[in-house]
Amino acid sequence: MRAVLVACLCFVLLGCEDRPKPKVPADQSQLKAATDLFWAMDKLGYIISKEKPQKSRHGCKATEYLAKKGEALFRISVFHCGDSTQAKTLVEHPKTRRVDELLRNHGEGGILQRGPLEVIVRMTHGEKPAASKLLEEIGAM
Image (cartoon, rainbow, N blue to C red; front, side, top):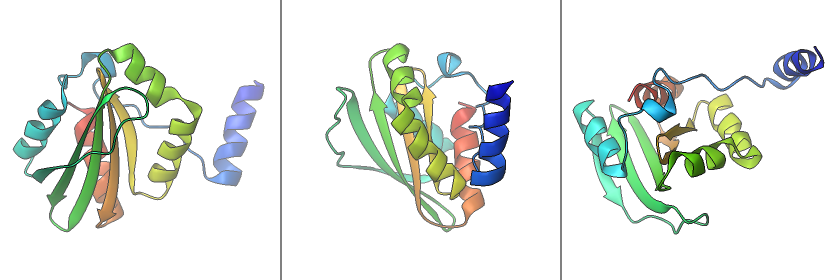
């Protein structure tokens, strides 16, 4: 009961919201590598290019993309962690969840787990609905 009360207060007072659940559970995702995301986004009509990634601090293989559709421009960081357990641990970490909340509350992106991948979406230009749409699309893969 107390957890429900805290969640309601968080939502009402701070504008917090629960992370929407992807259409496809993370462990059933068809995305097993960063290149799978690249080609899936290409099929969805995004213009996508590979960029030089930052080094990963948690031992996962980093890949960086820029993606554009219409006026929306996104920077997408993909971390291939080897197994879904490590990716889930990273995505569920309190600091990661806080960053996800900030991105989603500002309509600028979010963080998802897709199998062994941690996917971080950040919109650098465009209208807020474009970020939510991209997160839904990746969540359905």
